[in-house]
Figure 1 (tube, rainbow, N blue to C red):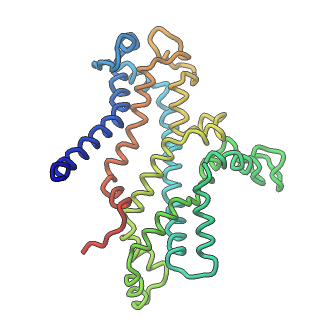
Figure 2 (figure 1 turned 60 degrees about the vertical axis):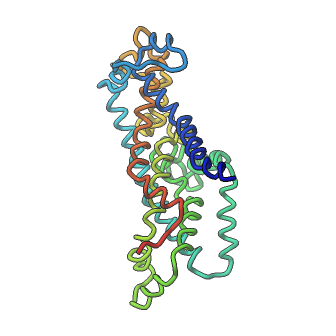
Figure 3 (figure 1 turned 30 degrees about the vertical axis):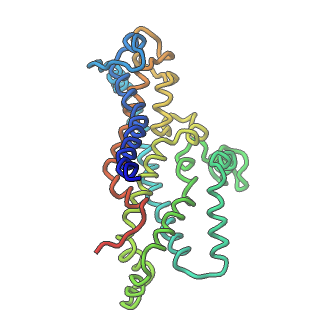
Length: 308
């Protein structure tokens, strides 16, 4: 037993190191492959040997493609800012209501909200698409939502779904439960109303969980591909980064003045090193986001703790 107790920590560290290596390997492989040519990649075995071969990145950042990439990133940043502000505000308000207020049917309403998490997100895609396409008085539709295309291929189709996020509400509600009610009671005695309590008392305490929501939102919006491919696939100016870069990697994005993305081959046959370069660039923003917010992310997942 004493030997097992001594080996417990080294074994845990070894398991974590192996797990981290497995998780990091695809990223390192993609970076190494992006620094090789197609011929060198074909000659490699289990791992490509990188060298200072930057033609893949040169093709990715060529002048003819840069305006489109900048536009895709801009659309993505608009979505990220929108979904950070509004769903987070809704989550804080609803979390406060479910955790602090007492009213008939509160637990039933929360269970119904929580039950929506049990349904796979893909199930909502078709009803959401119909709702967006039949939006009244939008895209040529009449008051009944007939006759036009609604918000299809328009920016609102990327901003309306998901404003109410059940997971965010659940996370904030649990954090409210971990905060002693004495803080709010003291503020009420000093004459603070509910908005003042939320802003001056709870907002600083909710910092870690809000950081979790920001990171989840950033990564979710940056990687969002399925929904944009359904609602804005025909409008290149509305493509977010994931959809645009995926079309570039697949070789299906062709414009006048765009160089062949692969040496000696047409744009339709993009090489693995070029796709790896695009994937590496697409991976950098989520990595940087998590790097800067990782301390708050860990605190938010571990639970709320009063420091003092």
